[in-house]
Image 1 (cartoon, one colour):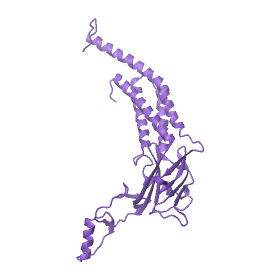
Image 2 (cartoon, rainbow, N blue to C red; image 1 turned 60 degrees about the vertical axis):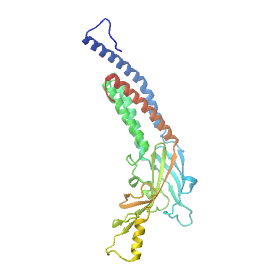
Image 3 (cartoon, rainbow, N blue to C red; image 1 turned 90 degrees about the vertical axis):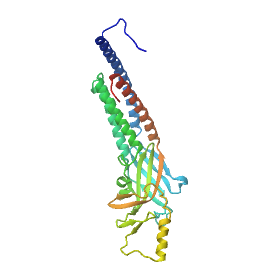
Image 4 (tube, rainbow, N blue to C red; image 1 turned 180 degrees about the vertical axis):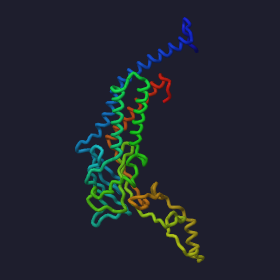
Length: 315
């Protein structure tokens, strides 16, 4: 189908009429956006309010299945864990004498870098909305388009921080474990223990690792372990041949976790992870913030798309 203007007009006049129509549509769209910005701002302010430090805070249970390996709790106030009592049972982490499990207690506030970074991004997003409303020119399509693009990027970055991982701030356990300072605990720490608390989606994630030194002058053999290098020549005895055949034909041991064969530089030493236990505790505030951020992000993407279509830009 095709549409024609009647009575006919010149091509130049048709182009001008189209431009005037797009300008009027853009003006209407920018006015409608100004009406929608308070709603976006309200959603972001609600996210910030959920992390306002308020006593007694949020207490979260941290326990593995049947509480066999890890059992305990942590209390979060704002962007810090202020209290925690965790009992650990691992064969590679001997319990102190007269105790059934290894106690790990947080007795001084523990900052959560991911939450601090998340709050900083939310404040940046609020600043962008204020600039779009009061400081800049709300009728300038190019200005508003740039602000919407920046707002969308910040919200996407905030959602990525909530997902966690080694790439986000506070995600590298070998740099940010919380038991690096003995003042955080009420007993001497085991040198083979690493504890790390981070965010993952809508939960707090506690990861317990027991560590062993990584020998620098060792060579891997066929069964995946490390043996010191030998300067003597190969033996030709029958016992040695049977041992070598057993090592060659034996199946590779199944790794018990995803870091079994990795080496890390931790507190000035090369170490490997012997045992690794992950425990998640869903945080109601994180669940709410995740839902609100997703809703605000969809709304911002919708406005970006509408403005881009009218202005002939690409998303």
